[in-house]
Length: 140
Image (cartoon, rainbow, N blue to C red; front, side):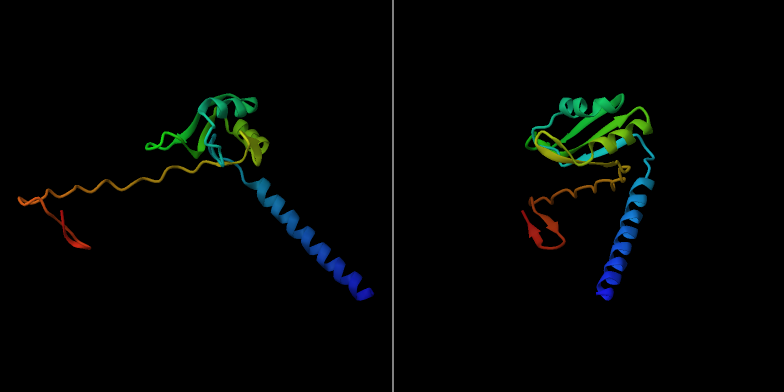
C-alpha cells in the first residue's frame, strides 16, 4: 500500500513538473512580427470574414485568405497583419483553437517567405519539334 502511494506521488509530481515546463515554454514564445499565420480555415471563409473575426483584438492592416489559382477556392490558410506585435499576441491567444465558419482554426506566428530559386530557362525545341528529356530520352 505504501509502495502504491509513493509510486502515485512520484508519477503525480513528474507529470505536474512536465506540465509546468510545457506551459512555461508555450508562454515564453513571443512574436517578432505583427503578422500571423491562420490555418484550418473553411473553404467558405473570405478575407472579409477573417478580418471581421480578428478585428476585436486590434487594428488590422491586412487580412488575406490564400486562394488556389486553378479552382478559385480557399486553400485553407491565410494571414493577418496587425499594427503592433501586442495586438497580434492578443489575437493569437484569443483565437487559437477557436471555431470560425464551423472549423477549428490555429493561429501561429508567420514565418518569413523563403526565397525561391529563379526559374530555369526552357531549351528551344529542335527543328524536328522534339526536345531532349534528361531522365526519359526523347519526347515530343
